[in-house]
Amino acid sequence: MEVSTEAKRIMVVALGKLYSSRTQRGGLRLHRSLLLTLVMKSARDMYHAAQATTETETTAWEPQNSTVETTTEPATGEPGTLPREEAACSPSEPLSGAENKENRCPSSPPQHSRKRRGKAAVEPDFLPCKKAKLEQANSPQQLIVSAVLMDYVNCSSELGAPPASMPLHRAIAAC
Amino acid sequence: MDGARMWHVFAGGNDFQWCFSQVKGAIDEDVAEADIISTVEFNYSGELLATGDKGGRVVIFQHEQESKNRPHLRGEYNVYSTFQSHEPEFDYLKSLEIEEKINKIRWLPQQNAAHFLLSTNDKTIKLWKISERDKRAEGYNLKDEDGRLRDPFRITSLRVPVLMPMDLMVEASPRRIFANAHTYHINSISVNSDHETYLSADDLRINLWHLEITDRSFNIVDIKPANMEELTEVITAAECHPHQCNVFVYSSSKGTIRLCDMRAAALCDRHSKFFEEPEDPSSRSFFSEIISSISDVKFSHSGRYMMTRDYLSVKVWDLNMENRPVETYQVHEYLRSKLCSLYENDCIFDKFECCWNGSDSAIMTGSYNNFFRMFDRNTRRDITLEASRESSKPRATLKPRKVSTGGKRKKDEISVDSLDFNKKILHTAWHPKDNVIAVAATNNLYIFQDKIN
Image (cartoon, rainbow over all chains, first blue to last red; front, side):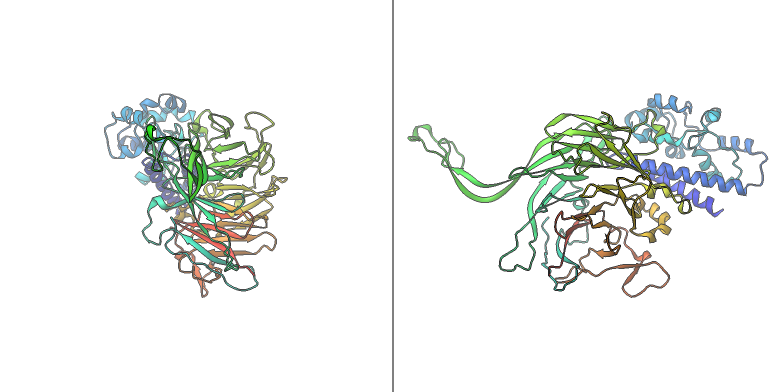
């Protein structure tokens, strides 16, 4: 469990750093953001590995997940999670996850992302929305952060297969 | 930036030992961010030493000739020229501020009385001409000595202006501005051995410029993926080969180095050589990717070797052997167990540089607590020295420092937890011919020399 606690901590720190780098003077640093993304991926992989070995109960993980999705912060209004789609229609990018946590109105994304077209604008909402689940089969390879965060928020250890959502690679997409 | 106190140091003795020479910069504990030195570079002869800082300023020091009265003292470096190279800018399209911090300075080989250097911030490279003026023309026909126009009716004869000596004035003027060629942040510039071209590298692209032409450059490397989400590595440093004008190398965040030959193709996306050391699986951690990212790459003066710096080590590579480095030096291995803390306080992202001495027999790089490390490639001995005001006493030889890694801390050793991670030496430079080194410690520049017998 120590590994997963460590992994969680590393992921949260990485998210904080990615978020605060949006306001950094000189703009987002691609190299630094990439390294943070890789750290998150490492931590996520190790976290899942640790979870898989300690997991004992496998029942009812699906309904629990969907329940969790609806009880977490309101959906960001993200239209879809196909990466190409998202990258193509960047003007309508959703809010970042951090803003989402503050329960802001999701109708402000277009204005926000239009102004700030750097990496910051396409920072993913780290919490999943219902639509995200539909795209699960399409993007198994991508770094999926929200599942981990969801777990962190809800202290759930019954993760099973991570549900798909906004991939973190989006964070460095529109630099 | 000329320091408030400068000490001349000389200590007798026969052994090769480093001793304090000078320190430049404010003594104040309160460091202004603009004064933080961001690059240090000797010119080809070592006569000039340039520093760039976060405030966009360049300060050039010149080596004064030894005084005849005190021949045992090596000449010292004094301020030669100071100028504002870059100003903060704003990219309105992207709503981004462009920092004025000088990322790199590279000198051009001297071809006439003037000196030329390239300085760059994140987006724009500038060619500066530094020239001396020690004569002034006097006796103009149309104007007085103070510049006022003379009354035409009072000009009754024609005279030839005469050049009269004046106090030395050093002028820096921007001769070329190479702008708008980099979408990402410039991390390197390197002058080619043909002395006509140079390369500039950002996170994803490398451009080749001609020094005379500012409105276009050739893109010679482009690693930007079609889909940015597939990005896995960025360019971290690039350098031209010191003798072969068609060869250059670039390092990546994955710890690899690619050597490219510009004769092979216009776009050098396919490398000629690929240098990578297999990862040691036993040392894998959360932070393996971060610490393997190369922060600096430097060819040896001979052109036979190159050196790379990653977070914990310096590696020397033989250009003829791609599968592993020929030498690996641990800079501060004791930090390996502290990577998580260093990640949290951002130190793990620090980019240390490295440098060769003139004969390629030794290499130097910085560390924390104002420590810097030197490695002798022949004897395999290494030494840790400190750049600090406290240990910079007149006539004092630098005492080797040691970090205690075990449980017991010996006298004069410092424990890892006592290290000051805010005092980092990222930039160092070694004189191209003599054993003189310049070490940048935050806002201070230390100059050390070896003893003269």
